[in-house]
Length: 128
Image 1 (cartoon, one colour):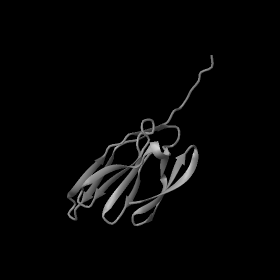
Image 2: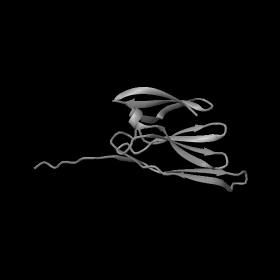
Image 3: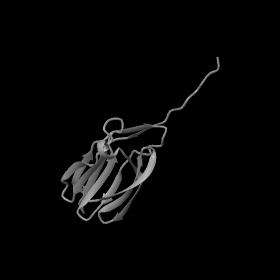
Image 4: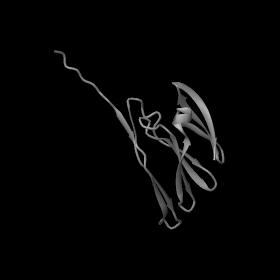
């Protein structure tokens, strides 16, 4: 008959909105990246996005829903607002989860990413 109390913190990282503005403040284009990421009690370690700006494009990398397919997705937007989304790392080939907050841009179109594979940290390098 002892009262018990528990706390459960849920981290939700959902859709990402991207806007490009003209010099006069008007909107040049906008883009919405649909994603759903939810985790409990881990601080959202594998949630969120990594942004890689290059000369002609902006790449947004993120883990797709880890409880479903678990791919690492790359959403690309060019300077005119044209966008495309592709699988950067297919989970059936590598089974990794990227840690966006620990990834670093290393060149004009490449980055080093920290990933978790089989409960071990690994590094990947992706060049676009």
